[in-house]
Amino acid sequence: MRRLHIGLLLVAVAAVPAVAASAYYGMDRTANAETPCFIAGNAGYKLSTHGDARHIVRIDNQAALPHLRMQLVDDPAAADFVLVDDSDATVACKGVSVVESIRIDPAATKPDLIVAVSRDAADYKIYLHSNNYNEQDAAALAAVIWQNASKTGALRSTATR
Image (cartoon, rainbow, N blue to C red; front, top):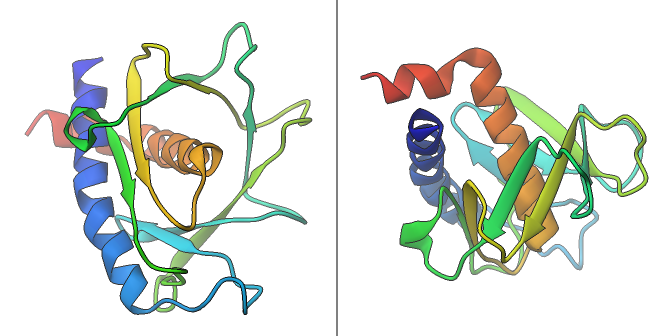
């Protein structure tokens, strides 16, 4: 469990500068149909509201056995995943070789991930301060990044160094 926390914290450390950099390349979301893009490691992640997506995430606080339980916290130092931006929009995936789409679907019967998000104590903590993402967006992004890192062994390799 501690290894996973360390791995997620390392992802968060890499993600904060990426989100800040994405603000530099940003476009106005209200004036453009583009959605913000979040970069973590070598991959970009975009939320999709329609069509096919590579990852389907169901946010379900009533699920008996969610894949992840996440706690929203007010202190970024206490968080495993930190998402901060202060621009009107962030579209930064230009030049990124892999952009994975994520769709939050509350009615999905077979989602890739089920996530419970609340202020109650949980193993994984997320901090959000954003004009572009809401709490469910941040939870879905964190869950997919966690899942990808778990599949590739990135969490294990970073935790054992």
